[in-house]
Image 1 (tube, rainbow, N blue to C red):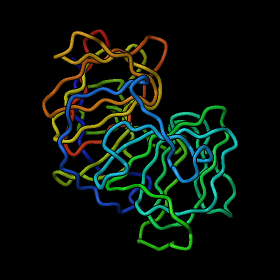
Image 2 (image 1 turned 120 degrees about the horizontal axis):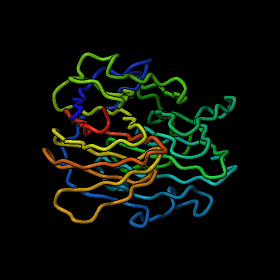
Image 3 (image 1 turned 30 degrees about the vertical axis):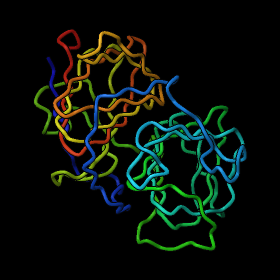
Length: 284
């Protein structure tokens, strides 16, 4: 089997500007959230259907702990200027999204792009695709929308990275890969301090068959592009996971993955330790 061990590294291409705390010792468990499991509500209940829709994947954004959720925007949506009480990170799953100062020229981020919105900074969010979906993650809650009158500077700076500016590393580019593989990695944020969280995008090639073994206490994964079949050892049923679906992994658990021959899959993985990606021999 081809065997990749993913370590944490300093985020590349200037993505370390945001200094959001990355401690989270919450234990992950083996769990799967498919499309039909997602319960939708309004991201900002005070605005009702003028607000984007929000669907929880893990945690609870109304609580004080970390959480991850989906946000669905209608075409042409544009928010009024506002702030948030907490910093959030986002990955575009579908459509085109813009997140910046209200006077900034629109910079539309396509699927696979990444951004960070610091707490307290005034901004707008807009959408221009037929379907617009993003994965949003906070390190602490609750997630609130507030008036710009309450704006403040918490020392962080926003980050907007178009997918074309991500740096993908292959087995030939990095020294911590024990064997060659077509799996690629793009680091987003975090570092290698023991127990601290970090996140990366993992690109699995078309036809990939193999497994992901989690070696960390906290491991959460969201499908950003494509779809895959996921099999957990303790379950007879295999799950089809589409873009926007989620799976969590207990420490030392193994998840078996199959990707169709006509597509590649990109997964956002958030963990506070190592995990291994192993491809079976027919991928050699």
